Length: 219
Image (tube, rainbow, N blue to C red):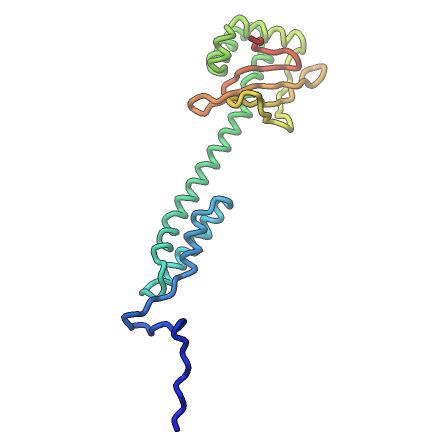
């Protein structure tokens, strides 16, 4: 008496390779690659993982052994673009932060240079450094008067350094306040610079305040 044929569950049985009804399994590697290529919560690293898994997914799905080759190819295409995008964004953020730091360096000559140099410095600073709103409320003479008042009250500036709480929000959503520590002969003073952003993403100054001495008067 021959042995009975082995039991096969028809609900889970898969036709053999070559059978017209054969449908290969979906590649989880290819799916994971596609998901990682789109993740934004872990910049660069998730795209790198997506690229590696995408290459593995292409190999795994070769010859029709597994489904999901399109996901793997998409991950290989998207991941480098994602890494490039994060790199460009990182460069932009670094440059923008450096431009904010430079705001204090641009103010420094006004409170350091000799009196004879002040009119030319003030005119250039007003033209290049102030926002359109500040220019409308402040001419060269008013800016020069503020500089002379600050020099008379506090003495010559020695250095400007960024405060530990460098960026603060303001009531105006279009501006932020940058805090610096201004070193004068008698003591350090609180220097606050209110800046906005022009159309070229360049910081422009709306107001400067050393202790209670404000550049732009209240309306």
